[in-house]
Amino acid sequence: MNSSNAATTHHWGEIDGVSIDFPMVVDEMHQATLTYTVPLEAAQALIPGDGFEVFEVAPGSAMFLLAVVDYVQNPWGDYNEVNFGLLAHPTGQPERVGAYVYRMPVDQEFTMKAGNQVLGLPKTVEDLSFVYTEDSVVIDLAMGGEPTMKLTLPRVQATEAPTSTETVTFSYLNGVPTELPLTIELGAGLISPSLVQMELGTSSVAEELRSLGLPGVPDMAVWGESLCGTFLLPRPV
Image 1: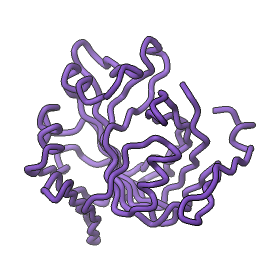
Image 2 (image 1 turned 180 degrees about the vertical axis):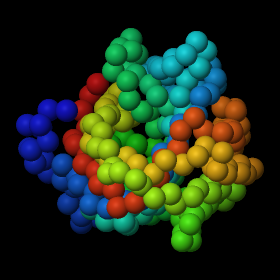
Image 3 (image 1 turned 45 degrees about the vertical axis):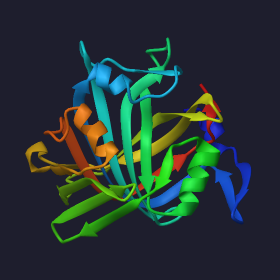
Image 4 (image 1 turned 60 degrees about the horizontal axis):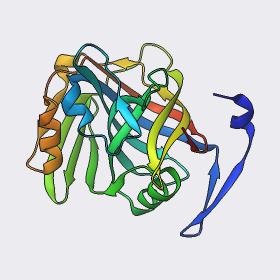
């Protein structure tokens, strides 16, 4: 990421009287990130248009990325979010790998509007909750009024500081293939994959997840609390 771009402030405009400015800094969030190896053909079928291709991590295989985020302090609200994504790249540019998020349910309307209009992200307002106990967190998602996914994770304690990672998320903004540069902290609390519990419901989105072979045991799972992130202005790929 270009540090000079990160230092430049850009005012996009306003939505519902709220100023939209970049860099957009998230001061606090709790997040789990999980990865799964899934069939390449089924993964490609979930990416619309022809601007992006799934990255082939091994012959015939792709990487499904699942991130569940509880935004505690965020300029766009204190909302919950689930990212259903795939490791992908702009068509014909396999060296530019990032995450294409093909569904992004949230639980508040403002972030849905901002995500759709400013970033081109497929945010929809759904029934999404995070329930915490001392030792676990349960994420319950219904989409279109139907049970979709229930995820139960241990709240593992990190043994080291979170890792700050520069990456990009891909989208279509007004039909144009777009990348969203960001720097985000990933949790350092390693979760034993066997302790991840995923239950799928009856919605069409649950069936999409089943088409990828889920539920199953993730390849990797991490949890972190009080993480930070910085999101930069989107740009065409």
